[in-house]
Every structure is written in structure tokens, then in C-alpha cells.
Image (cartoon, rainbow, N blue to C red; front, side, top):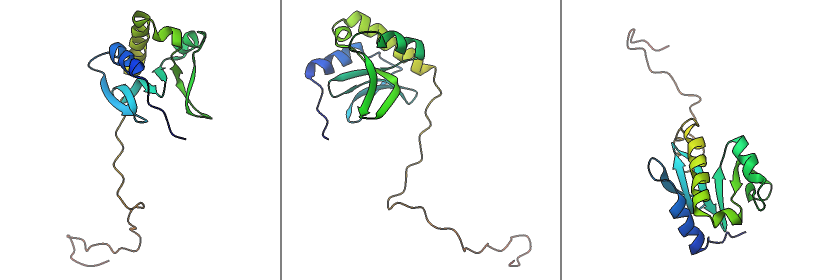
Length: 142
């Protein structure tokens, strides 16, 4: 399944409501996104804008017609993320406030620790069967 690019209008809206520093822009799934401390708090996916929200705010937004839990692939929900309903996309003031709530929530999460880059070629080297080096204290092999 090939994903569609978001419209220019949605991309513009996203840029207008995305909070500035300390938030940082990056890509997620090849789409514009915004991160704080390594955690994504908002982004675009095809023709949807998504926000990462705490439970109470998620519940509040999900009561809005057109809002739903974000599923980038069917059966793979990202439970803390809600798709912004179309009516909210048209109200920059309210949308900016929701983006700020997403930033505030994600700022409260522990910073993401970068994973060590995997070596090319797949599996790590085997270390079984190697001999210990002689101890520098005795000079003898054991």
C-alpha cells in the first residue's frame, strides 16, 4: 500500500500551528512531524493531522465528530495519538491550543534514548569459543 502525500493546505496548516523551539521538526513515516525530547507530539499522515495527548484530553477530542484513534496501518493503532477532526483543522486558534496541549503532554514524558545504530549485515559477531588473554598479573595462561 502506497501512502498519499498530504495536501499543500494541510501542510501549511501544520506549519502554522506547530509550536516553535524547543519543539523540533522531523519526519515520521516520511511526513512532517514535530518532536520534543525525542518524542513525537504531532504530525501528518496522508490527509490526517495527529496529536499525542494524555488520556483526559484524548477522551475529550474523541467526542468530537470525525476524531478517531490514529492507525497508520489497519490493526496497528497508536493509542495516544488522535486524528484531528476536519472542523478543528479549520479553526487555527483552537487547533494551536490543541497542538500546545500535545506539546505540554509530550514534554512531561521521559526523553527518548537513541538506540545504538545496528551494524550492516545483520547479526552481531559471535564471541563464543574465544580464549581469554593471559592475565597481566601472572603472565600465565589459564
